[in-house]
Length: 114
Length: 113
Image (cartoon, rainbow over all chains, first blue to last red; front, side, top):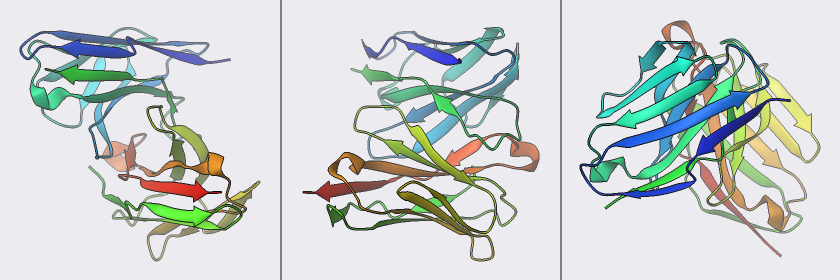
């Protein structure tokens, strides 16, 4: 069966510090991978989307970046965090683009920038 | 991003009642729709998907889709306190945004005993 791992679960970082969040998927190959952010009181915002190694699409301009160095690994990074980067970061995967089975989410990382 | 609108609630119903959650979307050509449940502090989990007009039932849950009205809803029959959560509506993109899911802000549901 397929599983998605995301870490760390919680993170407190000072403003201006770098960020690296990692997500890995097991039990499938060539998944579509996604990073979402859920800020307090707001909905899920799609940040990045990847259909393959090295292929990254950005939905919203920001000081975050994403990389996919391996087929089942997706990394979210920032060189300098802002207070507004605080939120609940979720990684998700799906099979293909036309699947009607939606996404499966990881357990999330709660980031607080202080 | 695609617009997906939900009443933020909170929606409060007694145990055993029917909870009705509504969602509208802006892209008339959207084809696939999803309902997720998110418990406080947890990640969303998929409850149902629907892509044909009409009703789709799964246990106590019924999803309803009306593409002409650009409206999708979720009914929860015999609501239980364990159903208390935020319910997220999601629409799958098409064309240049094919494969991407766009979410509403969610409706917070409380089922009281």
